[in-house]
View (spheres, rainbow, N blue to C red):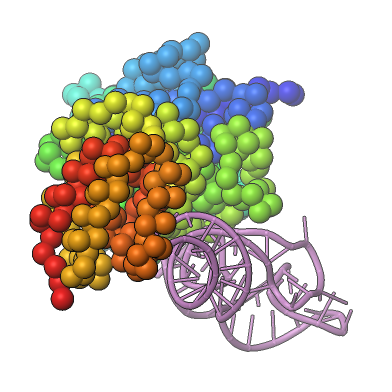
Length: 507
RNA sequence: GGCCGAUUCGUCUAUCGGUUAGGACGCAAGAUUUUCAUUCUUGAAAGGGGGGUUCGAUUCCCCCAUCGGCUACCA
């Protein structure tokens, strides 16, 4: 059977999307596009308790930003909709009934308190073939009792009935065959009457089947429940169209151990979320890659290399290249620690490769925030001069503010090192030299000024750095005549005069 | 505790029985630069432990250790 490749990314709207989730989505996307298949967004909001407003919008916005578009989604629709699980209640109810009718599932009335008591009473208590006879469920109660309990609106759950001692095989594209014995599984709750919603496991399997998902690509945290899912497919009689599984290794904390978490970002000063997120309840703000100045292509690139490699030494990949190169057999099996330094390096590379005009467009709003009205053409020239020195768009300001605002303070260290007793006089000479310049091109300035230094046997480093100090306020920046040309003759002179006036000579 | 998974430089990784164990980030040194960066060159840096299998194991098998995940009427 030549089945169409269809994959889905299925997050729960319980908060901002974790960067690990973004990687999972990316791998789904890469595989789908490579195979000419469909990439679907399905919102798994079956936990009414944990629903967070704005989370679904956040998810959509993330993929808009990254430029990964879905073929079907709640927003876009599609012929397999609805794509929000909370809107599929009847579908699940119907399937739960089917399992109940088949005797593959049963109704259980045990209250949370009773369950809790059992767990305290019996060590390693598990609701399964060995214990279900001792519980209050449709297997131990008479049909009449069950009927009347339901009619009296007693809350119940539906549990899957796992037969003991049967080997269950999960075939994983990344890990190979994983076999477990069904006895280690428990009779998981698949439906709760309280909110008339299924749990993840049931909804997931039913939707993947109905939406004709061919490959389930998700995080490793799902590996332990994969056998349950296989069991569910079999219970429905869907084993022939069961999707292929691929469980991706986890993204770990940069230091120490454990899954990368929200707190790591706050602590280390790096984002763990694609976009900035404001918690609707606490108002707490978590930083995002977008707001931190990462380019979407850079984020995609470094995320792709975290858990997958091309087998060559190529590291910089466009999205199209990734689509072509991706494969499950080059996915690693072990978790990857998040390396922020490398992420920065990727961004640096991407900024370097981005056209000056594009960077200018991103830089303009930042300038505006700083209260600066600048001509985009001028900004573009500034950007061209300093873009090699930054990792992030927002660092453009730190590296170029002196192009927009004359220095108010002069770096102490540089003053001490370069502003000598003879410097003010030299700067006055320099002012005269510049005043008389007809041609203010970089070449001409350099020619005249270097000759002046040579003729007077001045110390080149001291003179030039004093000059730089007057222009920049610090001992840094691009080639000095590139700065003066952009600043213009008048502004250059103004800054020189100001420096002579403001900087006191160090002995 | 039980179940599952994983284990190569500090980090991401290559190696599909025989290699001086390769690359990248970061780090260090040097070169370039009138400054700071960039860039370039060079360097330091790795197979968790113990058993097998084999002429030969980082690579295959077993045990242990460590790490991680799961173990909810969460996903």
